[in-house]
Image (cartoon, rainbow, N blue to C red; front, side, top):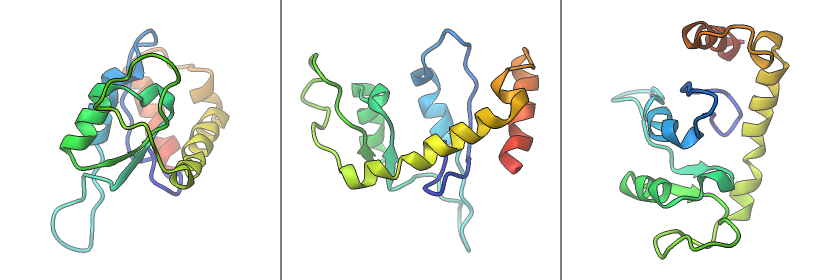
Length: 132
């Protein structure tokens, strides 16, 4: 998960054969943005994602937390009445910051080639990359 500027905020590791939806809620709840005073902010105003996040459980979770989704609808199939069919394309264009962050992380050789096979070690490699 990144912010609007492409700075990484949180990550969750999943097995290679698992869909990333299994870590969606866990990753979103790991974000804590400290403010000038009071509790850290844990809820963004918008959440941008690609078509892979266009599922009913995602929209239900975002609705419960009062987060506006910026997710394009999937083509074909029945998404159901609870899934929004429209989204803001101007906000969706800003999603390139996420792709730039992922591209930068892939540029880090030890992360892109997954030299660390254990999840604990791989997560430990991601944290210094986030700091850089």
